[in-house]
Length: 226
Image (tube, rainbow, N blue to C red):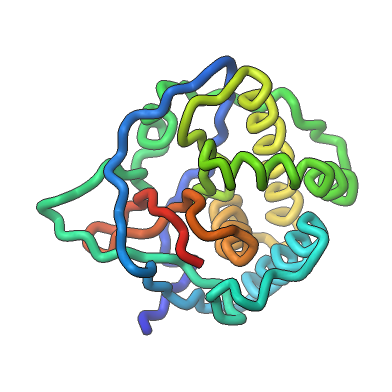
């Protein structure tokens, strides 16, 4: 199994989405395979503390430990797919901070105005826990997907109310990642990616997630197989 070190990912922009009104996503090529391969995350130094935070926080937010049948080992893993370069699907690049994910949905980069920057981590976690059932409902209905940046991304039409909720939940996630980054001395990109791979353990089969394309290092949308 290949080893993957989060610090070697490079500059992975944490993209924040200001969502308003109904959103139509572009058609993407869906990658179907029996099961995504996974790459072990090599935990070292203060990154171990980041992952511990992610595990503890996600267990609190979900209200339970991850299912034992989640199909993942004890260590966080990143799903990867092997796609020939000649048949590239629509991707989310890690090297284009101002385009990619945002432009794919016709959105412009904005700063969240919904999050309370003075809110403590415990208050943020309580709200994320209260919102968790709605998050699961959006994921299970395939209206949104979990991106490697640690945020939800629309994958289908959203009502104005649903769009506001996604915006608010992403804003809370951003505040959480900022708090953890400050505690651990790691970047927001590393924290967001760590929470993403831990969050995978809680997802149901069939939901939209991002996997890394081994051919070019870009991120593509797949249906999670657990």
